[in-house]
Figure (cartoon, rainbow, N blue to C red):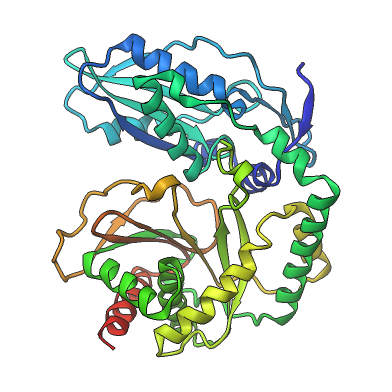
Length: 419
């Protein structure tokens, strides 16, 4: 067996989220991407480009020793292999539908690498590469890096440059004396916030016990308003959207102080920006005066609370779990928020059902969630060129309550823009 090494903190966070899943849910950490191919590209070119990016990134050649769930390890990366690139003819199906079917097949991380790809053809002509990965292998940022490198390798593999470090090197850096001091500071951050934060859970609805809802708000004017308020308040767009979301949740809960989990990308140091792995971790932020009618003021406060939180985004989830065990009355975060960012501000992709530019009516669609891993009330925001999308996944909450939270975001943004 290959030499086993500790997981990085991001990998460990993923493992803690999934280690107790029954086999029927092993597919839930998967994510599917659809990469359109340029006209005239043949199977050999696709295969060569795919092999080039796999050779560059150890995470795509890594298996895991998971026999002891309390002490998971990553094995040394395997040598690059010429994996069979099977073709799938679309037969009239949408590429996203074919990719979703591929994502529903779980990965056995001890035996297989955490990704698979299929070449989609139309009447025998390559049209798309379908790329499915397990979250422990790559987060959203890393997935877009792979997409960019794949396109570069199709045109000219020499443009890829030297390979970046891998997750084992990241793990080693996180356990140097400097890295351990950062982990200690992050644990102190958790300790302070858990001691101060009130318990303010979202009210549960009796007819929704045990259910999980997923609703998605799409709005062109909300995107315009978020950018306008960000410019006026001199904060980031993500802080504005978070402020609108926090205010909507706080009004639902009837509280002014809200403990929120923020997704930290943890790619602030230049050396680690190009690492293909999962670096995302949840980090807590305490938002005071969350029901404030002045969204500009709330966004400014949220901005600084968020910056403080993400400074402590790399931590040992086992240490936080031990802290919680010592503090049995510590509150759970009321909600969670992730503003999706990818390299070069590349839009993560348009979604079906989005409103046309200039359409002032917000659109809410309801979907069957692919995964129920994660916090009880989780909003995931992203932008396309003209639309703001907020996907809310919520447990034990009725549809009307979910809709009220989403429409509260929309109303807060448009009201603030008009002021």
